[in-house]
Length: 150
Image 1 (cartoon, helix red, strand yellow):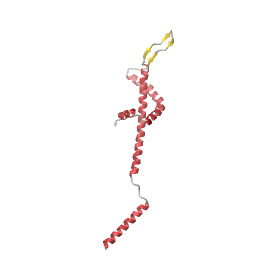
Image 2: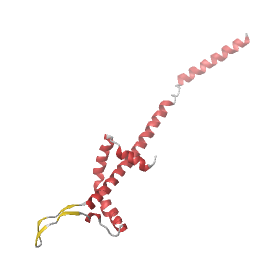
Image 3: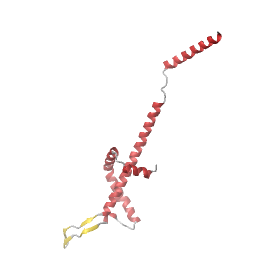
Image 4: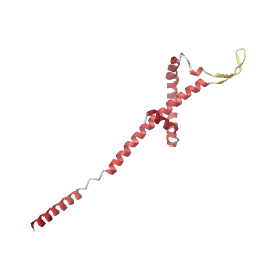
């Protein structure tokens, strides 16, 4: 299964435990991921796209009302650039959670396989069982030897 398909299956699954892990890890790494996106990824995207800073992009619904330099009523905007940056943050957090759960599932499968292997393997006979088996085999040999002699 490809990594991308496995990530898609994870993202679309409604498992409560996966969601709880996602919330905890997302909260713990939220600031780190925001800094990663704001300070490293988005500037590189800006350079790649000709110096675009996505946080500056917005649609102005209503312009600000000003009286000289004083703002009487601030402008009303849809900040779609910030929204795109938030989506990038989310995708990074979701992918990190996916990788963490993937590692945990791998360990869980290894433990289950070891448990199944231990259960499937027959137990070693005790010293008493080994001794009794040897005695039985010797008695059988004696009985066979006496039967052949008659």
